[in-house]
Length: 202
Image (cartoon, rainbow, N blue to C red; front, side, top):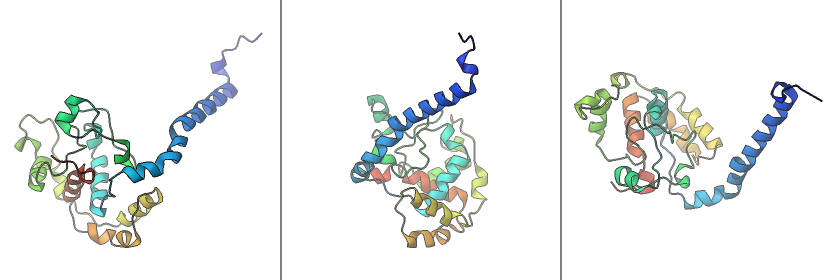
């Protein structure tokens, strides 16, 4: 009779890991292959422009997704505050998704065009100028750093490999579409796009 704890067996640990990973694949990944076309058909999502792609990367690199969610739950209180609730088909071109789980700041799912570009610029430079009680940090350096667009074409190519329908012309023109814009302009362009392809009315 074995007295050895099974958690100390490397073999059993490997087998257990494979079983759990396989189950996860069967439950979460495999079904997506069968209804992906249905999601695409019912979705009104549009691919981000080259400048918006750069803005999204800045949003991630500055850690905005750690304080802001992008997933409105189908609850009356959330819909009244943040707008239309999120659907799976909204995020078919999101790699990675930015749903988040912590709302230190408001949810941004349907933020696009709720405020002007000027408002966003003031808010990014110093949030207290438009929201006196805001605890959001200021990002003045985004107005000083200029994009050269050298990596933008590669980013769009990578996204196309993941299923985002960029055409050759959009990819070839990506660098020029971005070059010379500040990081603040790119981030604002991304924020203004949020929810707009879903026909959200503010």
